[in-house]
Length: 569
Image 1 (cartoon, rainbow, N blue to C red):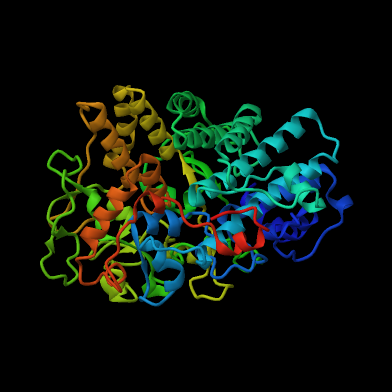
Image 2: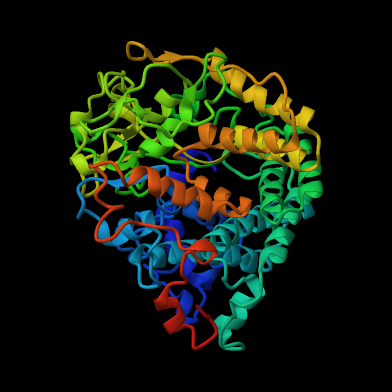
């Protein structure tokens, strides 16, 4: 699914998928229109509907009647990063407060609109994969073509269900037969009281075992993308032995759909640069496009609005002190043991806090905009760029395009001035896969193997391009020499995921699967809420994480009400 294919077809696809839409209320989304079955009952037609299933990877669609589309974003910036202590809501205290503040405080209720938006977007993706498979039954294709399309559809179905499972915990699983039975009235609904992980794993495993290594476009899922997803889901189910085998296969043999061997880019920041979209490090990405006559709906716009607040951006998604502090390094270039102290990169007028003067992991300044440091080619970042002091001093950087790219990569044909951009939305990067494998090696007791994988990523950070830093702060990171124990290795790989993948929507879901969400979130709240700027975590009462009951977000009340009793809280 190359960018030009997606941008040409996405609007027609949105109409096409209405043919086989689930008719039960709890998944009902009104179609914009419909194409006749004869038009779609061909290899070309099935592929168009399949592309429509890919199009939901970003979580946005103009026909879903989503409230603000912040919650539905495929990057999980709200539920994974803001909900995972990496970022504040940003902007001013009231802007998008009903959608975002309860997530940052982990006080979200079942009536939160953003949660309902995410549910609808993900089940729209499921519906489109099932539509593809239903149409496929009516088309005569070669065995290889049949298997390829089936594999891609089941890969996407696994992805959407996986996102549902890690977000809500209790969700229904829908395959093409269940979808058809719902549409015909043969069944009234589907329960959410059975764990769907085995069914998700079945889809991902099928895709891994049946998809070809090569595809006709870089954005399509192939065997190795499916292996990465399969391995990731296995890690969430704690099947470390199987995950190690699968992930090792991907790391050792994996290529992108055009046959390019997976690997780390020379520079960390290349992963967040339009000019390097679909690099050798990209395993799964939403293929964003701009200026394609789609009203910016194919652009990457839901996270931080893609340009600095000083240049018209919305000012949301501002990194926390707690997250930023993780990038401090010691004289040996290794993470400091107790980073959460009163030395910060930008005291921001906060009483009792002083300017940090020491080493940093260079990934800090490709992840976070901070005072006195160049912000791509937009100029030297100043905390005066933030829209409101309560947002904190920092800016998200990974989702921001360069000023020099605005002419070609920016699309302002939507209601806000910063519009959408053609920067791809990273969903799985190769470094993510490597760190999952390192984690599986740790759990298997193979800490030497884990050390090698982690150090490849740290060496990239050490040797890659660096942002000129402020006086007294030196970009310096080094590999580990050894791990003294399994516990030390486990701590290291978990921290490395924060440093490497921060602000990419992974953090909260990692904390939950590691069983440390309560400890980590309360450490964040206790540290962060002492800052005078931090209004949202202090008012009306100090935020606290309510234990394992908060490890999943509530099932949307609207879906419970529409389900005729099949979906439970």
